[in-house]
Image 1: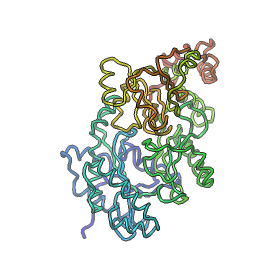
Image 2: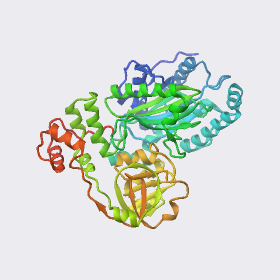
Image 3: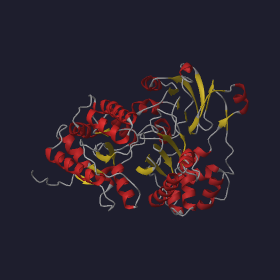
Image 4: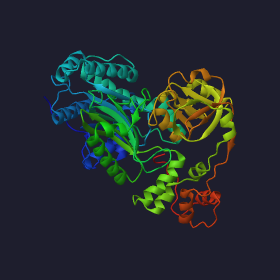
Length: 502
């Protein structure tokens, strides 16, 4: 067998911090950082962003020398976990996209790759659970077909080749192009491809998956905020396909795992110097972290969390001020629904508040229709059982988004916080579709939906502690909140327009 000559385009991830975010993408960069901090992460390697650029320059062709490096890198994972890709003790992997700039939900992922009829049987024998093995294969085949656009072949190596190419292709998917255009992200960056050993939240009752934020992404409060789904896997929580449970349920069921998770969260916030969004999996009572990145948060939370981070000594005062935009402060002046109107029009649907704000519009249940009607100047509220990346354009065109299932870390919640759209999630199956065509008022702060256009009252925020702190820091003597907005808009010392973490 000939020796594989490395081009440096396929990199085994280690905790040496030797590769930049631009080179290996945000997902792989976060793995590299977590490994360096001693946090438990499944072994992984990354196909760098330069391969994506070369792939598209070549008209969608993966060079043979790169593929040979991928094969060699799989051998490294096999050695680390004592399993064999396509062998008697099957190694399954995830294949994930990861651009240098965070693009949540925009590109593609394939989990459980490497499973086929033979490995399904071996996993069932190894674990004693035919249900787990069958569930793992079904999940893989459904996701592979959606991402790659073809049924999954039996050959694990062919699965891997097709999935790597599909992730590279996803850089120029319609939704990714639209996302970058809306946010001024250049098209020439490319995505990396991270290949990582699978850990299984669907294995048994001591397994599951979850997402947490090191501080509340709705209010900026200091408490860890997250959700957990026992026997869940992969994107079950963020997709909103299932109603996850509060993170406290993990603390009750597995207190040691929860304690380890909280310690890792504190470490990642301190080292990341920001509110962190963390994805994790528990397999049979063992904790694994999969990703950590600056959290998307509501504008109100952007103000409060910056102040709290400075007060905790994570960042200094000048940096806290620099992170706060005038629009973030304006969000603190957000109006509330008039009490008399709420009494006259009680909520017709109630869910979890996912992004604060009040909006009035006509209910539309199709994302494409929402986009078309918004283009015609109509205010629309997009209502869906749950949302996925294909709905983002319609979501962005709407004045609010409401979903029947999903939690506060679901796709709808995360995207709406980034867009600053009022959002309510998890109202319950079959609670919303009958509202199609009706005008409603959505209160993303209380998690309610009301029939008709309700009146609003101005919020009383002059004495808000966050505004008081900002006035002190900025040397503003009067109590008018508009003075804080004006000072930030004029360019307070150290202010910037950075979008990281929003």
